[in-house]
Length: 201
Ligand code: AMP
Image 1 (cartoon, protein in one colour):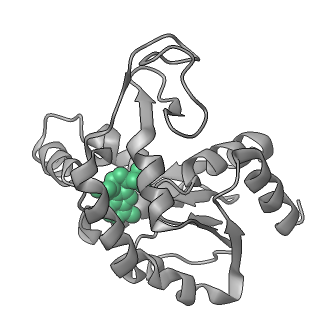
Image 2 (tube, rainbow, N blue to C red):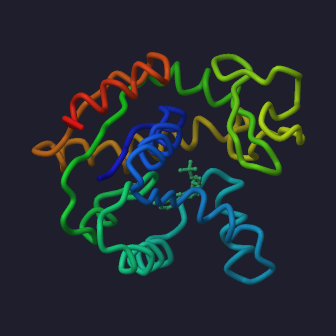
């Protein structure tokens, strides 16, 4: 299964819930690249530069990396952040369902500007929507410091959104026969319930 939608639509949040509740591996290319970004290698430095500038990592790095991960999984998975363009989708076989979380560009900007991540445990909060940190700048789960991703800063959001419309949105048509469209603008629980019901789980 694939979850697609623009930045901030809730892909990661919903994928994590589905993964936990149904015990299905969750593969997030964003999370993979954020780990690679920390490496003190040529690849790490290249990935860091691209991510921090809100640019996609080239297919020649991304596709083999995902293929290698998926080759180890025999019983299915939830892909989040991949495929991000038609070329990447052509590298995949056997996709059953594509969940498309639809939200407006205005809502993307509002959500991304408010997004804050925990430095230590990776939990995600939002200072304008939900879940809000109880104490400003502090993670509700582990008490560590929150930070804003470089690519979530105002200048980068518009660039990332443009890439989404140019490269990723065409996947909606590409997968139209197996696409489940869901209004992603509602709260996390409502969106999750609709995913479960539309997947007949
Ligand atoms: P995300 O957390 O999905 O917003 O991804 C964060 C960043 O990781 C993106 O802005 C890209 O730089 C990179 N990235 C994640 N997934 C992909 C992908 N499928 N193809 C290329 N770059 C990706």
